[in-house]
Length: 238
Image (cartoon, rainbow, N blue to C red; front, top):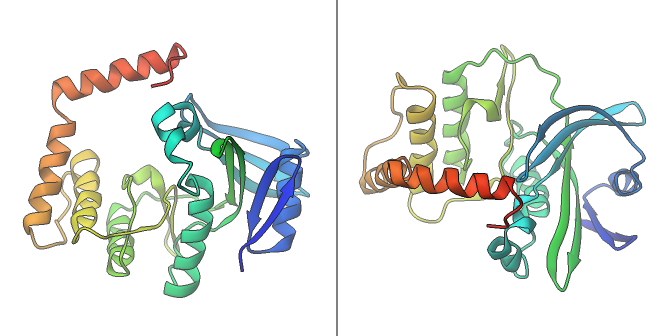
């Protein structure tokens, strides 16, 4: 059962009461930061340590610095809590142990909208060998259970001889045919693994996903994205 506890204006969510206490440590800044992995306007990711145990701390800033996304948090759990709920469900109910396990989410709201959130998940201590075929196979596995990744690139997988772990996904369910499965595989193939043997039959959802991928890569779309990125770096909330 998902637990929730209010603490100093924040809501802490976890399936294990011990992680509620870890959440309080986070809110009180009572932890050691070992390594900053990413620090942008959109995201902050670091490795932290509490009671000699390492965790990955992620702050998805994008959902509350962009006004339109912040508004829709009125009706949503937010990225951190959604990840905790969905990934734990996928691990327990569908035995998808390849997902990196999220332990807790911290959420703060103002006027019903998220103004801060954080996700704490397990630190994967595996030296990856970047086996792209293993990444494709584990992606096929989650697709077979009805889930999609959403950002299917090699940096979001850790592979070794004995283990594969999936990172940075909310474990959302597919609902528009297998469009999302094709989009995941096209992301892997077009962006990273050009010689990949395409694993699925090329149906109407494949061609629609391919159209969307190519559309997003058009020069004028790329210029718009780059312009928005530069404006965000200057403090614009767009």
